[in-house]
Amino acid sequence: MRAVLGGTFSRLHLGHKAMIDAAFNAADEVIVGLTTDKYLKSHKYYRAPSYGYRKARLEKYLSKFKEPYSIYPLDTKYGNTLSSNDYDFIIVSEETKKVALDINKKRAEAGLKPLNVVSVPIVLAEDLFPLSSTRILNHEVRSNGHRIVPVRIGIATQNDLKVSSASFFFKSIMKNFIVEKTDKYDIDTDQPLGNDTQGMALKRAQSALVDRDYGIGVESGIYRDSLTGKSLDFHCCVVIDRYSRTTIGYSSGFEVPENIVSLIKNGKNESEAFRILYDENDIGNKGGIVGEISRTKVVRKQLIVESIRNAFIPRIGASFYNVNLKVL
Image 1 (spheres, helix red, strand yellow):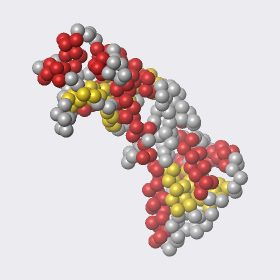
Image 2 (image 1 turned 60 degrees about the vertical axis):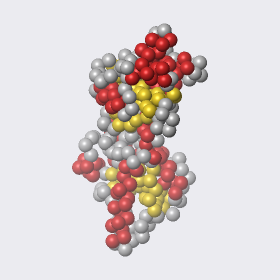
Image 3 (image 1 turned 90 degrees about the horizontal axis):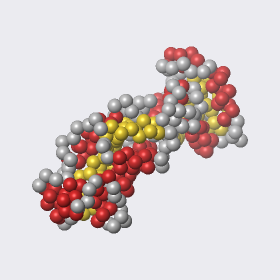
Image 4 (image 1 turned 30 degrees about the horizontal axis):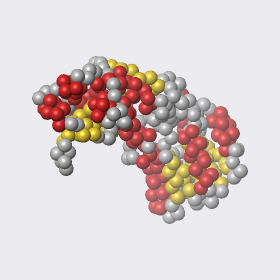
């Protein structure tokens, strides 16, 4: 069984290695098409190392495997995949899967057997954007996916608890990042109700993005439960990245006491209502109302972190979602 894959391999990174690994797992022999300098010059927007340099780096990694391999010059988009019956598998990334489907369509028209397509999920860098040779050549990330410059994360808030909560979450998924607080945002009310919560979280995220990698908006809102008629508090987090992709996440909700809800209906926000009823100041920057009600079994920081975490799940597991990552 033979597997074929192709590419420029300007900087051999984790994404390339994942494809090569998949090829050796699928077949007994691997053939790699390596784009020539001539092809590269007419099809790429950046200057890449020479064919000889790229081939040497590729051979160094390929030689780690026991199975036989070969490298041939690739000077057309499809190489010889439209005419050869020597291959059984074609290895592609999610980004280039369409090329493999086009190849199989053309092979069928030529009376050749279709190739088994092995699609390898896109490998993400530390910042959860796809790892690519372009980004490595631009000195933004290293070949292992680590960021050279910190991931810049903006959060629109005047509440330091939201800032510390965001930092707490990002420490679990990144090493090189900074969270920057901005108070330059405009929201309609201090206490959103229902679907207004998402809209205000979105406004915060948009204001926080500017020239950063991510903009984050976290908003706490009151929702009416249709089953019990009770009022529930949920934290909503909206995340926008530098490519305008938007994701959303929610915390778990808790029931808000009706005496607090009554004051909210009269124009107070949750913190103001709690202060009036229980003479407790600055509740929003502490454990929150939930911390007082639950006797600190749950505190507001946990709910904020939960909403941010859930907004990032589609980014962490991007390969499971129909997300267009072909912007890099």
